[in-house]
Length: 194
DNA sequence: ACTAAGATTCGC
DNA sequence: CGAATCTTAGTA
Image (cartoon, rainbow, N blue to C red):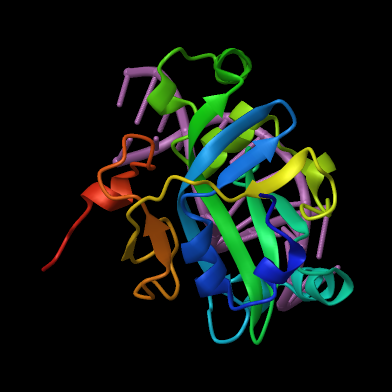
């Protein structure tokens, strides 16, 4: 069952947690969402809304469920969903377990290993072909692009977000524990604790 | 016009 | 560990 706009008319943290375990359909390609992060425009200094006027304008001009796609580090597209409930913000899609279109993903990534296709926010956009053309796309309108509930359920655990320099302690990363397709950055290993 | 920083990934 | 690569925003 396709996830409608109402789902995204809640708080970013709630949407981020509940999207884990859902299926992302992207044309002929699809995968199970196994990792997300929430970014809240109110009080979250790592959210683009905090320091980018253009992002605040984007939020004001679009409805919940709209894709927010941007280029990071000049090379990696990041796929987010606009959330507008009591609080406004975004859900970053960080990792997928590929379901369909494996060969297309392998070709796009230049890799064979399934666990390397979508195990990171930059990896999955490359695998799915997500880019600036998808910015502002309504993920609740187009039948071929959006999220769907699944019968299967998954465990979800929480941790601080990865790869950011501000508001690093907010526990707003949600993922399936021990899942092979969850992103594995240095920051994860770096459990540096005095 | 110039500078700085960034929700990352890959290779050495 | 450090390069790759470019958009946004602040400053002159």
